[in-house]
View 1 (cartoon, rainbow, N blue to C red):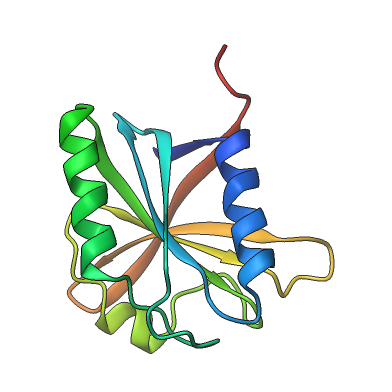
View 2 (tube, rainbow, N blue to C red):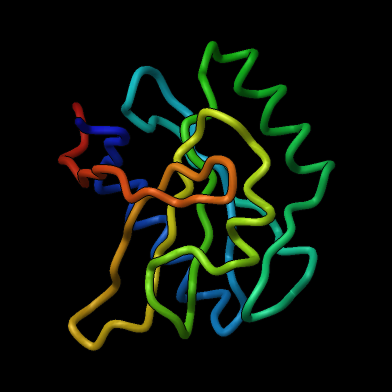
Length: 138
């Protein structure tokens, strides 16, 4: 079952952010309706590290306020892995505290190009879920 649909333009914005911020992990939030992401909220990695991210509370609150004003739901929290595969680390799993979202990891490690995967993380377990990059709607 499809858990998250990411329009190509949003995927390209995520990829641009990941490449621009490498070797630091980038992070952000995807919002939309149903399973389709409609808006990207780029966040600052307050930890400024290559192996960990932490969003600033001020940016998170601003994003949630904007989502409410635009009747959007938080669908996903994303971050990059500049040097490692697109799978959650033990730290990612431990800090996955937001319920009912897909945790998206964009890896820049792959020789054949970037790899993006989504996970549901509950009770200390990560399960891969279906993601699809789609054409933008006109």
